[in-house]
Length: 202
Image 1 (cartoon, rainbow, N blue to C red):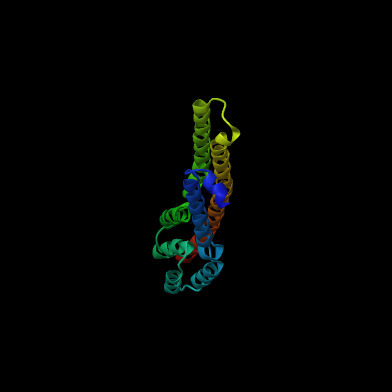
Image 2 (spheres, rainbow, N blue to C red):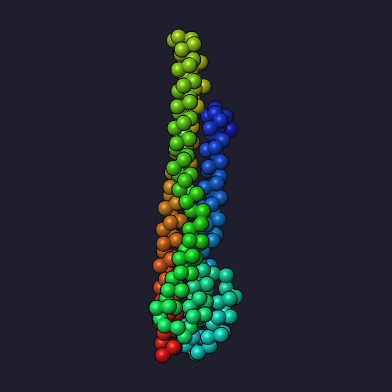
């Protein structure tokens, strides 16, 4: 593998860096987007139970103890308890949008890698072919061994770019889908709390 990497030329290095960055972001987002962290059902059930018993302060304290996007959204609703439903909903949606943006953080980096890696491979193909044609221009009908370096660089960088780009596309799509799914669950949970707040206010 090291020999193939070296034969691919200097463009193999940025391609390798792209792969490392994409993998690091993917693993970090996988950890950050754990269902139990983003939309903890235990928190939701406890908050609903406390609100049903009229224990607003205890529900607020509970939300403060959880480091979770859902906890932030619910806590915002609890802070505006007593106001009209539309105001509470608007404040919760504002915080929800902010939390979703945090969930999406760095995901576009993977999308960028998916777009850039094959372009780097294509650039390697172009530079490799240029080297081959320069050999032909200098030597006329060149020996196969003389052309091997340029052709090898052309093929290896293209392959390396695709090897990085294809998994990056899959990772990007997976994380984007996961964020959308978690966002919908968080919205549904927030609506359950909102309905209960409205009932309690009456």
